[in-house]
Image (tube, rainbow, N blue to C red; front, side, top):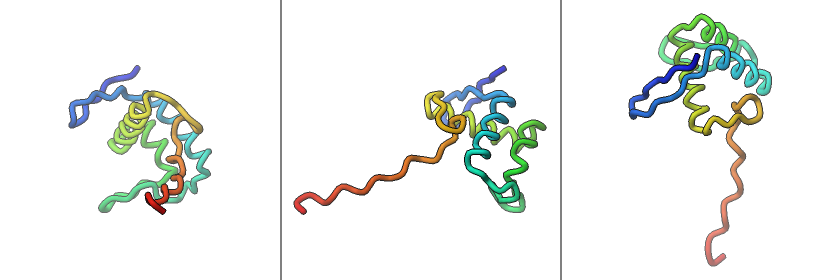
Length: 103
């Protein structure tokens, strides 16, 4: 079951289910080949490693809810389109800048 989450800007985001979020993270980790011991995010005294993402999602911890909201927000920004590894992809490479006018 999907729920709506309101953000500070008043825009509602359709939350992914826990199962969808776990699947998305698994696909992303496989595609990236991330080291499970590597740090995903660190703030203050808190550190979250890649290997801890799925347990946080399945146990619905506060960190897990934030991860799920971020995944849901990312999906809504892409218009619900999945790409590559379940929709988690790196941004496209930047093209070379245009030469200055008159050169």
